[in-house]
Length: 461
Image (cartoon, rainbow, N blue to C red; front, side):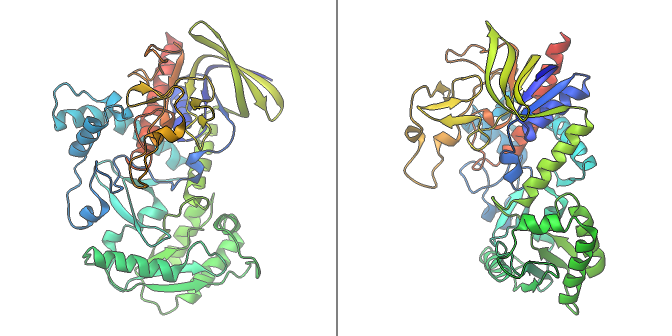
């Protein structure tokens, strides 16, 4: 199988698909090569721009609950000052040294990128609400709080700032053990009380039995969600919830995160109509992260609408003439394949997505590009050399990745551009910790959009 395109994007998560759709929107013929779903599909489905995870860079969740101000200009300036290799630093003007000047240079570029991908996701059935200027707290399935900038509607409606005492009911499903409503409700109530929240109080917990559920062995959230894509199963589920809550004074329902995969919006709206309450889902981690799976499927639908070809394949090698990549080689569903293009975008992620491996040292898997940390190549250092003893410490291994300039072209071990027709996007870029910095999806959206723009411009030139 041979594929010829203007641009080939390697990686089909948030960063890669954003890059592909941006290039396609500029009239380029684009192919995405993806081995399998990666980190996007098992994530929480929210978009962190400048998140809070209790680290030394940004406000902790506790501080925000106590009334500390969320100040993006200050937080961004602090982030790139302390982490100068962070990808955000490629998109700001730091010469003036002013928080306002840095934010003024960053915000318009981020807004354009975010609007681009959020608009296409909404049209594909995955709507997110929020702002880069604000951060809101949402319940998790473990009874904790998760703060984020943009969240899918079913999560965003769980903003605890709008809750009242006695008006919240946690609703689980018999046999779906990944959401223990009694534990989650008590845990979150205790957490809010500890933080001195005015909306702290005891939350009710209920359990619904699925009319069509398995009587033995239980069901995973994904199995229930797939069943709820069926209109008849959806109707019987909503009727069961309605019956369980009869006579209950509830303003908010925190439902088990199972409200469908492709048609979750329909289930959400039907529940709200029939119960009269504002319905949300808690954030749930991998491997049961339904929100991430919904996001990935919406990205795939948006990609198809953009007219981009998607190839399921593993890239095993490439041909280059000097500093110019000519062709990728690998194995696809239909056997061996070759992909020729004028420009390439690398968006393979890190360890989970297969972009990085730790075999005989840390390395990038497609072009064998050098991995950097702290502005220096890692070279042959074993991964454990980039780990610290304390569990909660920032781990250098999780900040390692490719180094690139403002044109997003990765550099070689000497700091020179490795390949003239290659750009990189997403978490394959180093300089930040996906979890600790709370900027993962912001980096994906911004660098994906910019990489797609640059690759399309290069083709035109």
